[in-house]
Amino acid sequence: MTDSPIDPADHDRALAGELALRVLSAEEERAARARERSDPAFAAEVEAWNEHLATFAAEIAPVTPSSGVWLRVESAIQPVANDNGRVAFWRTWAVASTALLAASVAGVAILLARPEPAPIAPSAPEGGVTRVATLSLTDGGAPAVALAYDTATGKLFIAPMTALSRGAGVPHLWLVKPEGGVQLVGAIDGSATSRRTLTALLADEAGHAKAVAISLEAPGHTPAADAPDGPVVATGDLQPL
Image 1 (tube, rainbow, N blue to C red):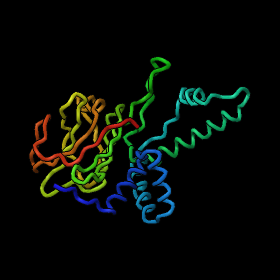
Image 2 (cartoon, one colour):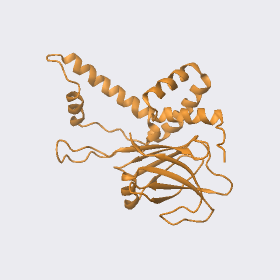
Image 3 (cartoon, one colour):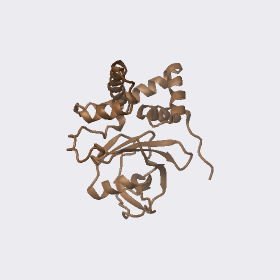
Image 4 (tube, rainbow, N blue to C red):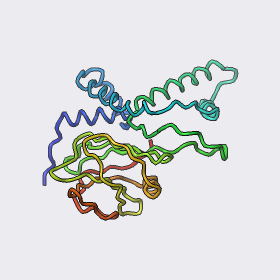
């Protein structure tokens, strides 16, 4: 079987989505930003993604950062003695960059507002770890789905970049375990963004999974929890954000 050619429009749409989600490498993001400035059509794709994903950010209630956040920021600055201006500058920069990141990564809006946990130890991390993946089609390699998962809330965000339904197949999402084998998450919408809260069992699996995959199953059929019956059409590694 030969790989199907990637439609340029699908490639641009996927690249715009990855830029909006901030999942590109530093080099790839610089190139994409340069193209955004010079290519009005591509800039429009990026803006469409930002507007689409911002609807999730609108549901996030504002949360005032704890004093511990500023302590960690200032401790990482390597401050110069008696240079209060420098500390003030970096604090201002931290506020601005945090706001910008919240807006541009609105698609990863599974970072829903949550109360700050009571401190257990000074080194204890606050909140969960967001894990992201870009699933690519096994036939052709085109990006197909952007996915993000918050280990603290159990929220899973799924954003198809291209329609996944082929014929009568229904997309089903799978977690790939570190030791091998898979765990079924369930059927997903292959053409529209969606969110779900994972069960305790699935949340634990998602927190340790090394990758995710999508299979196409017959309508009305639910495969066994440990093996797809239909073809696997997309895969991607899970990485911390």
